Image 1 (cartoon, helix red, strand yellow):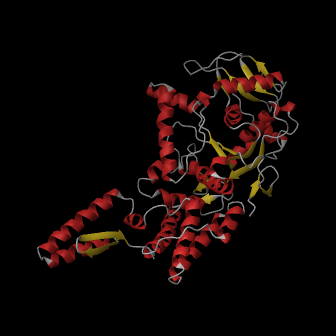
Image 2: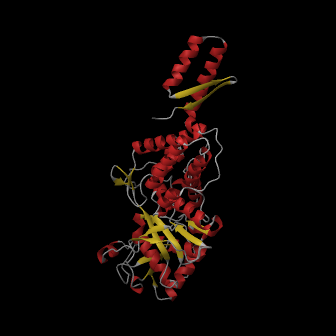
Image 3: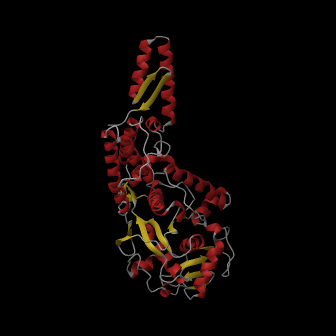
Amino acid sequence: MTLKLYDTMTRAKRDFVPTDPRRVTMYVCGPTVYNYAHIGNFRPVVVFDLLFRVLRRLYGADHVLYAANVTDVDDKINQKAAAEGVPISAVTDRYLEAYNADARALGALPPTFQPRVTDTMDAIVKMIGDLVANGAAYAAEGHVLFSTASFPDYGKLSGRPLEDLIAGARVDVAPYKQDPRDFVLWKPSKPGEPEWESPWGPGRPGWHIECSAMIREVLGLPIDIHGGGIDLVFPHHENELAQGVCAGHSHEYAKYWLHNGFLNMAEEKMSKSVGNVALAHDLLKTTPGEALRWALLVGHYRAPLEWTPDLIEQAKRSLDRLYGALRRAGDVAAAEMPPPAAFLAALHDDLNTPAAMAELFAMATRLETAGAGERAVAKGELLAAANLMGFLAGDPEAWFQGGDADLKERVEALIAQRVAARAARNWPEADRIRAELTALNVEVMDNPTGATWRIKEQS
């Protein structure tokens, strides 16, 4: 079954054919670690984690290399470190740890590599030197700029008109630019900011060169897949492509370019600069990470997705439906089965998650209606398919007890009181406590050794 992916460069779905099926490479732009990441930052994390899982199934876990970088040199990092009076590493280490914990809670597998800019500085300087030597970059007043005129295909990835290409060239100072589209590869640091040595003077890299150098360092160029949010197509990925090719890597930088759509709140792209953000770190305090993952995947990855409280509630109800089917089949051991063909066909069609999720519900129905001799197979298929998407790895009973620690403490205290009331044959008090638990949507199951409980499934 062929995997088809929508390629931004060609504006079409293409059969995925890696350069070397024994070494499939994928790079995704990661976080700038100066604060907690909002849930919109985690849409590419979850989307490309799903693709990582699909690729590992197709080519083998040992044959897929996935790098997701960390930007730990940035103006906002410098500002936060200065405000706290600490080295930038104190800020970046803190928020990278939080970011990785949030990603794990959302079910994301760790990438094969997580390169950091500060650990790749020699490779960055080397790549800039290659560009200068190839006539694709030039030094001017302590800066080094990329010469867009050296790359005739500049603008091809984004399809932007010349006016937009000029407006998108982000530099701090520009009087010495040879072309308005040229962009910074190296720049002097401001007083008090971290700096690194280079042949063009002490300073730090521009944003775009960092990713190009990290890709070349950890994966080698060209790569099979380059991913990220749709907002990175221009100027970031456009500039990456130009640098990578002109640094001596023929005509190709990445065989396939994949981009996920925005996560919107109140019909605007979620953004810290706008202020309309929901931090994953905060959402995870009250919502299971599995539900947040479901919500992020419920729409097709290339389409925009509106983030609302109802979206999260719908995700919980969907997982209630699936975990409920597993709970009712708790007396059956799942057979070792591959995911069904219809489910795989959906994922292989450019990660069509809405269609794949519909197949999960169909599998849950089959499990509940299967004959005695078919339930083990039906359960195995549901688990294999859901696990491939990063779902249903938990215990169904634990799911229905919820992730609210305060609720769990309250429920267990009430159950202990009810057990004591029953032992004292205080039936009115035991009934009162059961009614209080029912009001909390808790179902109590009495047994000879005490009682167990679970949150009732939502209808």
